[in-house]
Length: 292
Ligand code: HIF
Image 1 (spheres, rainbow, N blue to C red):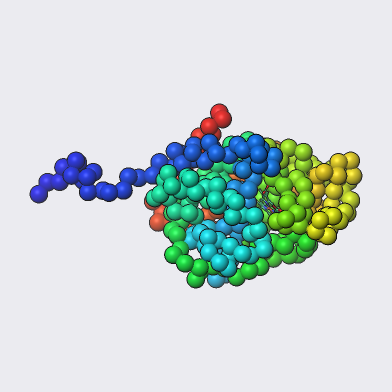
Image 2: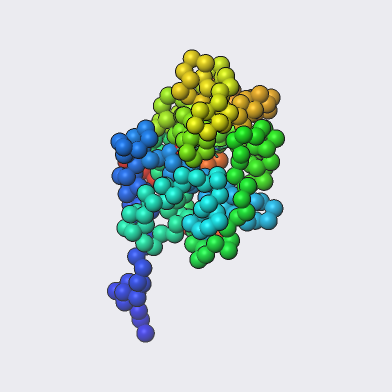
């Protein structure tokens, strides 16, 4: 029996997802004048990264596949404080495109936020499948602890499979967003324009005079710019600045935003794909920014 095109179409009950449409829908909800600095983009980038950064390259566990942060105990891990807000903000998108997995949605949202806030195009492909419960939640402690030093940063990112250059290329994402005393205990943005993706983070880290300060509400120790105490650096970042190998790369990216964008695009894509069981035939998307 010859199966006509019509019959074939009818028997497919699922319409393929147009991920550019999902991207556009997320881009549409980024701006919010009542939230932080006027955009929910930064917290979406943090959600994408915390979903992915639990990956362990030795046991091949963790990562954005499964979207296990929806479940306890991972939802309750201290490192994920404040990310329920990001997950809730994406629910209307999930309702509009119910076929998308949470892991795909969260990582796509991170890509969208970086691009819409002025960053480079990040290649992205679908393929994450949702876990049905919290059985594959990762143990607490896989994400970095900002109170620690460069040895700890290396331990955490080497475990994911990154090298020193890649760690520093990722770090520039802190050009976005801010710390919240009620989430991490730290306070403030890393530089004065927290809704613009630029290489200003590296310039600030390299060139400004950072002095130690205690956050009043939490008692946490952080570093602030001597000339503008509103902006901050985490203890882990000052430790990186004082590390010879890390500081070499900080200097490279402070000198060239172009090089930063090129390397960030590769390394953020790598982060978001850690542990994802791709079939190999997924289309790679290069999303068109809505601002262009
Ligand atoms: Fe962050 N990060 N991060 N981070 N992060 C915070 C906020 C953001 C670390 C600690 C913190 C990366 C690496 C590290 C973003 C993106 C990335 C906060 C503040 C802390 C403490 C949370 C809060 O109080 O709301 C440490 C120790 C890291 C290893 C060096 C990544 C590279 C920079 C991997 C990355 O992409 C973003 C975006 C935010 C801002 C969130 C917001 O709500 O504005």
